[in-house]
Image 1 (cartoon, rainbow, N blue to C red):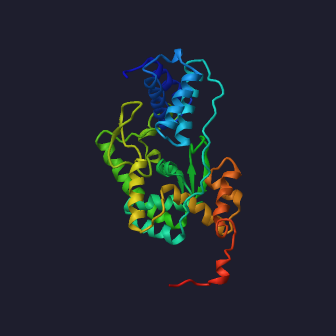
Image 2 (tube, rainbow, N blue to C red):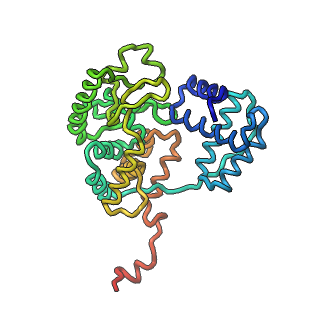
Image 3 (cartoon, one colour):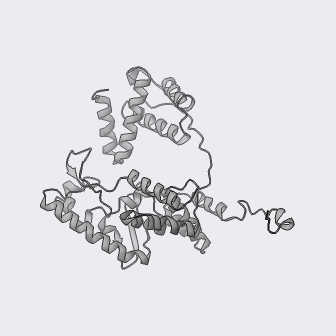
Length: 323
């Protein structure tokens, strides 16, 4: 599909509401796929029945997960409500399966961190040490680190919420050393006519010099300059999420861990280990940025002995089973 006025309207609507570039890209992609699925039929000629048919196709023929199906539905609900001005009716969301998080032991976390190298080790340590989501860690700015109070200021986290989390004292020196290298990279970019960084909420128009100031630079800048997808300006973005995911995968394999551990497992492990250490569950909730306490309570299930505090009768018959 070529440039579409409707898709341009969708992009404009999303930007007015300050949604992230990732949300914009996902919503535009789903609307494109929806139109292509119906042989490029104009959206004004389609409504609930066509949306249901598309979602059924995703579930039955494409075998997508419930979360992916719900994302597609959210995109189409937004599109018809805010762009077409013709809201959809009640369309049921796919029921997401309840899964317990993959929690690593302290020894496993240490093995993984030892397998990570350079900047990736520091990222992993901060995700585990502060219970950050991956993108929260990668989007940190230089100004967000407060060494005096050993904390990080998380700006515009999930749900566009800000919060303050701890910064492990063990990371003060490594982080300062790392930021000195970031400073040199930024200075070199400025000399070469670059050095600008993306700022949210049109702050770059309000504060003309802010995009080039050191305090606004990313803590974990990308190794390469790239073109901003919205402005077209060449800037240095943060490290891509996929880059760290690949590094984490190599570290997990190198550590000999056979479970499906991902970067998010470091956040799960932080929460579980914090509760083990006696931290109040509401403090853990605030640290993680959960809107509901029920979300945080899932980690209490991981702490229960045998999954549900069940003591196997085999322990009475065979204290130790050897061949």
